[in-house]
Length: 199
Length: 199
Image 1 (cartoon, rainbow over the protein chains, first blue to last red):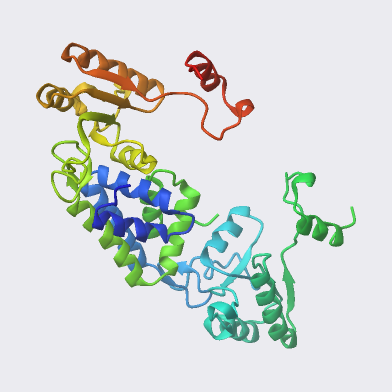
Image 2: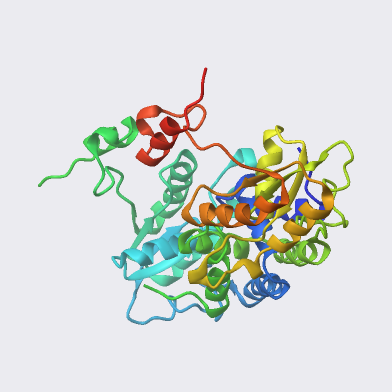
């Protein structure tokens, strides 16, 4: 087993930190980059730095944007009294792809995770409370991942929002649309039974 | 459907060109990068440029290396009369991982593909012939992908090598080790029957 040249090894390690990229994919990407032209590598490097430099957080919702406030927060056709709270910016894209939500967003910037040292003070929860108080919001949808950390965060936020008189909802859990009932895991199927709806 | 901020869109497009990365993964990676610190982005950008700058092609085998000739070509414990010809540098890594080959390598730099305008003059075939003539090689293993282009390239190279009196072999095709016979495709299973070996 030969070891990689040092600069290549460093690149592979950097690429392995990206989401969904293991060491094998990272090596494949790195070698393809080095097989390509130097101009191509420089262009990729520049686009990373430029994107990071030009992009900031929207001061209202916390989403990534070049102009502050962002296009969604300034879109008067969207219901500003309906706010969907999400973990990170990529969740906004996922929800926008559905085309089913016409309110505004609020990026929490993570989920509560005491073991990783992430407490309420690390998230944009206080800004959500402030926005609720001053914005006359009608409903806040807590669109967090249906995981232990997502549920814990949703419960925590809901408790803080309760005294403010705003309706707090969360996304439905159940069978994926187009999915197979006998392939669903027990937790999902169990939730689908408990939260069944009248036809 | 909102469109991405321009600098982010550019980054997503650049990332989508990497092997195994579609638009969805590219978006996920880009957003994770922008969610991270600026220092982290700069570090990744720098490691891409540095790896590309420091890495060159070995003048003997064409593999990626920081020192020329590369560690494999200068390793006296390896059989220099046995050469394994591969399509690209990543194939060397794959073969080295097996720990079963103790010869040297020769990177062709691609496969013949007339439709993409890749002819023999674009590959390092002439250098392989030169190496065969001057190096007193005993065997050349054509370790190319078992695809139409791989086979065509192997046949073309083998024809040129024939008059030089060197033994030319190729990798065995057949069932993947640990694989399931009834999951194998017809071509693979057919080849496994045709190329069956005495037990």
